[in-house]
Length: 365
Image (cartoon, rainbow, N blue to C red):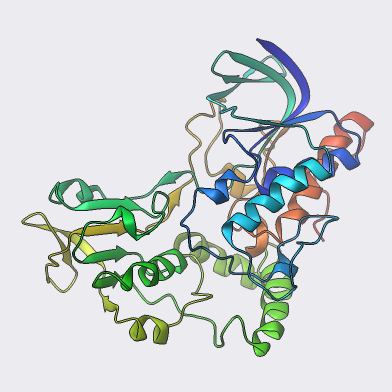
């Protein structure tokens, strides 16, 4: 089956829908392809107890505020349903259940293949975020086969675990949340460096000012590629992530979770810590992040680092754009409240290809 569109957006989560909204505003012809069966499934597949780290007032996409109390924290299912309803509200052309297997080029047009489909496009927007392939250390394969191993991407709830201890590897936001989720029924160890935490509870009144300062000003305006401090901190943020937002060290201690050093290897089939201790656990949950996965992009000269070098616009591949990656332009580039600025810029650039406007260099506000 062969089809042709002016623009194909790959990914139907909050990023792809935001790009679609801005393309529709500019009367562009486009389609959004999403590998999931329903819009919002990328959220429905996360762990059951997940709540967003940001209040509802910061979780709305363009032109439709999130339908909840402004300072409440939506569940994963509420976020998923909001995205599904957003796509319907603005009649965005999402095709679900379509996984792009390869992106190549024939002449001046991009060619996307998906099972028995072949789609040509003048423009392609990769809006799949930076989180694609689970990251685990190579020595994970050496653990005793009787130990249940899950990645945070696969974890749903404690019923997936065996009786016995649980080692959660990675002490960022996902690791902290999941360790609290399992600690009621299992002795739990949380391994990894201290990433820091917010100075107040996110559901308290002082946090409301903090959110305004941090999310709307610091992450959106200060920590960008256009500021000296943003350029200085960008490599560290890309490699190490940010601080704990909901959970703090007191929560972890109160839950009886043991904080331990990082896991460095395996001894006798069991995880070994940096202090040479060996933990006799029945379960390991890897909260060690995910890799960007661009191996399906088959374009001469394309470098997986290009999206970060050029803030999502690839000069060597006219018409190819990336949106939603961590610190693409700003710290907020991968956040729900921050993706709109990058999406608007890309949509404007695409429209300019048909109206004779500037091809590159639009300012980012």
